[in-house]
Structure formats: C-alpha cells, structure tokens
Image (cartoon, rainbow, N blue to C red; front, side, top):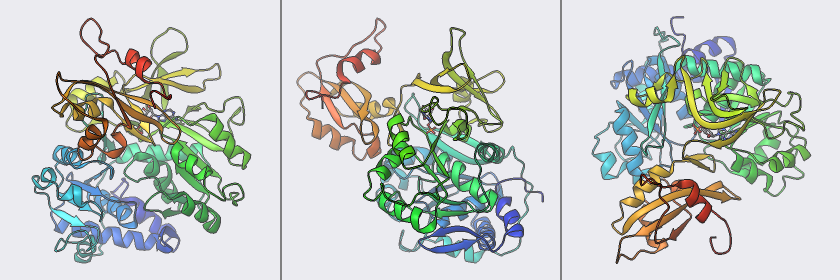
Length: 510
Ligand code: AMP
C-alpha cells in the first residue's frame, strides 16, 4: 500500500480479521470489515464535500462509532483531524476553530450553546451533524457517507505527514495546537504494545474522552492495531462501567485518577468480579498511592503512566511486571517507554526538568514557530515543564511542575487563562488563580482577587460571570477577596507566596 498512515489500519485489519468486532457501542458491534467500508465511504463523501489533503476537519462530539470512523476517514484522505474538547466554552472553542481554520466542523448533539454562539457563527463554518438531531436542515455524516463510493482508497501517506492537531492550553493563556503525525501516534502505539501485553482478544472500555490523546492512543488505537474490541462509551458512568467490566469481561481500561476514584466508591465495587481486567492504565495526573492500594486489595494493579499531549502522550510507565512495582516503586511513574528517551536538566543532583525525545514526540505547534522554538532544544528534546526526580534504579518520580498549571479531574487548567477571563470583569483590579487540593478532583481552582477602589463584587457574581467564558472545570470553586497581592521587585505576582497565604484548605478558607 502507498498509505503508511493511520487510515490504512482499517484496511489492513479488514484483510486480516474482517469478521471480528472492532467496536461496540450500546450492544451494537461494528466489525473490522464494516469499519473499513464505513470509513472508506465517508472519506469519499468528505472529498466530495470539499475536504482535500492537508485540510483540517474539526470534530466536536462524544465518544462514538461515528467519531472513530471520522478519524479513519480523514486519515485516509491525508487530511487532518482536530478533535475538540467538549467541555470548553464557546469563546474557547471559537478561538481553536479560528486557529485551525477547518474545512468542516462535524458536531454531535448537545452543543447548541457553542454552535449558536456569536463567536462560532461568525466563523461561517460548514457544519455537518453527526445525526439529524444536531441541527434541522444540516447535512448529516450519514448523508455524506451515503454520497461516497466504496472504492478502496490508497493515498500516498507517509509517517511524517500530519494526522491530528490536539489543542492544549499554555502559560500564555492561549491554546496551542500540538501537531501529531501518523508516525507519532504509530510509534506511541508501538511503545504501548512493548510496555503492556495487549492481546488480539483484548476488550477495552473506551470511556475517557477520545478528544484527548490518552484514551485515543493508549487504549483505542493499540487495541484496534491488535485486532481486539473497543467498547465505546459516550461518557464516564462508574456504575455502568462496573457492570460492563463484569458483563463483557473488560480486559483493558484507561482512566484518569478521578475516574478510578469514583469507580472505587461505586456501590458493589468491593464484591464486583474484576478478574478479567488485566490492563488498567492511569495517567495524565498524579495518582495517590492510597488509591493504588485500594485497587491492589481487589487484585488489580493500576499501571501508572506519565506523559503529555506533545508526546502522543506516553513518556514513562510503571509496568506491573517491573521490579518493585508491587511495593517499593509504587507511586513512581516508572521508566521510559521503549523508543522514547528522557533526560533531566541541570547537573545538581537527581532532580530537574524532564526533557523527552523520541519518534512519538510532536514536530511542534500549529502555526506557532515561536512556541515550537521555545519548547524544544537541540536534538528535538521537548521541555515538558514538569519537574522529575530519578532514583538509583532510573525510576522517575514527578515531583512538581515548573509550568503554572494544575489538574482538575484529569483536565489541565492554566491559571493564566482563568485570570484573563477574570480580568474581563470591570470590578477587578488584580487577580491570581491557584490550584488547591480537592478530594474528588485532585485539585480545583481558587481565585484571589483585589477589587478596584469603590467596586463591589461577590463570589457568586464573579463565578456567574465566568460561566459562559471558560470551561466549567476551569472556573474556580472559591474566591478570596484581598486588599493586595504579593509582588516581586519587578511587579510580577509571587505565586508561591500567594499559594502559601491563600492555598490552605481549612475552615476559614474552605
Ligand atoms: P496533557 O498534555 O493534557 O496530557 O497533560 C500533561 C501533563 O499532565 C504533564 O505535563 C504533567 O504535568 C501531568 N501529568 C501527566 N501524567 C502525570 C503523572 N503520572 N503524574 C503527575 N503528573 C502527570
């Protein structure tokens, strides 16, 4: 085949295991042959709609067979898929859409507030509904698929070609599009197959959002490469997940910390039959050792991974077969993935910023040569903005973040972005946003605000003001009004001091 990219995977699988179930959603299975036929027809249909090689196709939707099919169809054309975070507010989504300028926006139902917002409408995008419930009169994905032929596609696509743009936020307050090539994701999947014993009989529960690299590249794509089955769940529902694990004999799961936490609190967890679950992977945020132990008591070893979108995302992993994984190394993020290398900056001992290099590392940011130049150093070593420590056996521990960011329920929150939204309020003179510990979400935001002289503003008013401007998970859970904030000599906020003064979770500072 001329197509070396991700779009060829369904073709290659369909010639190997056509009758096996590739996907299943709500009890309905899609075989590899069906997935190949659907993705091929959709690719032809998208081309008729004007999508050409290199064009971006944005997708705003819940996990679904349609989402998976769209990714393969777009890949087959050599076009670029842009999965959008379903949790973002309208102005945030509009910024991303303006930045990537997609040829099409494919949207699921449930996003009227975003789709009907002035900001998104002003972009005048060609909107395609996942089905006919999205917008009356809009073309549906099904209609586009029906319009396409079933003739096999085999575009010359190389591993270095761009396949996906994944937006992440940054310390400057504006999202950046991480470019991921067909090769980046393929190598990430190879890494995972070396790290974990993924089998052709795997049944993976894909319930974390497919718009992030973790569920996509650490669960869905590895399982499809091996010929296993991915159970596609639109959203995370711990009770349902527990039932599916028992009923369908789920063998593999990717989850962020808050998902594992809620699963452990679900009635029936203590007695549920979990023995089928061999590969339970977590990543994207720190995971408390106590939670790892709760699962170990149920005979389940959660495999902790460390990574970031720019690395597609896998960087290191503590495999359950690694020496010490069952005790001494618990809580460590493990050792580097097979084809990926890690280095720590500085020569002052064993702690430094984590740098990553490897075939899974993104070539850089979409349309942002400045940001790309700032993030990489000679040899294409990526600065992660995370601080790590390596023990004598080479195990990595994530000790802190250099970047001003906190993680709430697996989603990254960059205070700069939240502060920018708070500054839009006329009563605010100055503000700082910090992350504080939270039992459910790991961390949540707290805004420390100085009001303009004579201005009045309540916590509730400020939080309501933020509601349509930024995603809900970014909105602080509490606001502390103060007379002044700590600055250094050059006038910059001293976040460490502000955290010290206002970051405590206690009665006065709930
Ligand atoms: P994202 O690009 O959304 O995948 O977020 C990546 C960031 O999440 C990393 O740069 C880390 O700050 C954090 N992160 C990922 N995995 C871990 C982990 N195992 N432990 C602690 N922090 C993590």
